[in-house]
Length: 386
Ligand code: SF4
Image (cartoon, rainbow, N blue to C red):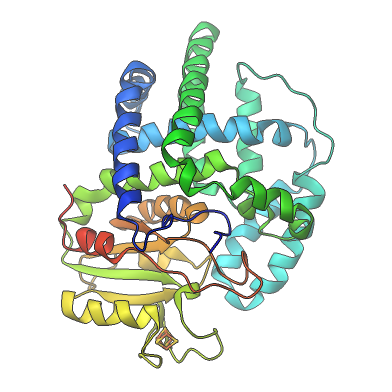
């Protein structure tokens, strides 16, 4: 079957080859950073230490932040800088409200879709030639990122980097931004060679459905570029490495699955609503969520179905609860954002990609039941990946 945008399966029945490829390519990315951006990351870490801004995190996280900046800047800065006036604050608040108030989410999404297309995605772009971004431009683009609701976590992290860059002179800026641009260009070429076979349908999907998504709140999310898919694939692997030590100290595990993995529709599924999500009761033996629930009873992890754009702060550790780690599964376009959000709430997390996207709401008119690699899941849950 032709993938909607990406598929980790190729023509095979399992996705082991993908996991081997992405681990190999992530090693190569880390090696490349040694000659390109590691010195910038080290200087940033020194700055964080000097001003005691946060507990220093793993280096992989900062590398991912810098790579994300390079890719997202090149992809969206021109669009963002072409927008002079927009309800930035209202739009970013709406992005939060839709997570906290599931009942009025359809109304919020309808309004967001119109406002995003009207204000954030202008038809006419200023032909900005931006070899060295200025600090004011970075501020403006971060405001735009937050307003889209798609890049909130990235914007929070870029603002930290921007504060650091604000302490440096213009010669240093030039040096830093040309190193980031060079790293980004290298990543584009190498990621196409290593991961392009899993994402070959992305650009075709974008050109076939351009008009369909106009005025929809998921317009940006569903039209992400091929390089962004590769960024998120490597991002998921970098995050898993960065968060693993902490995750491996937890004594209980919850697996969070999207609704599109169910064999039945939302209305027919008999899962029971609980404060943190839906709990499967096994009403359909062939259902993949049920299959994972059964594995969970043997391997001692809980399974929850989490509707898209749920309030992940519900998972932040609380007194009286077990020291719980979370393994989240989602499609390539949303997984990294979710991982960063969980990190912000202090949740020890790991992630497993859906093998392909297929939910009815965003991707496919009839909906395709999604799935994940259970070997990868078991390796993570049994803490067998070092
Ligand atoms: S088996 Fe579980 S997840 Fe699947 S449809 Fe039934 S209750 Fe819902």
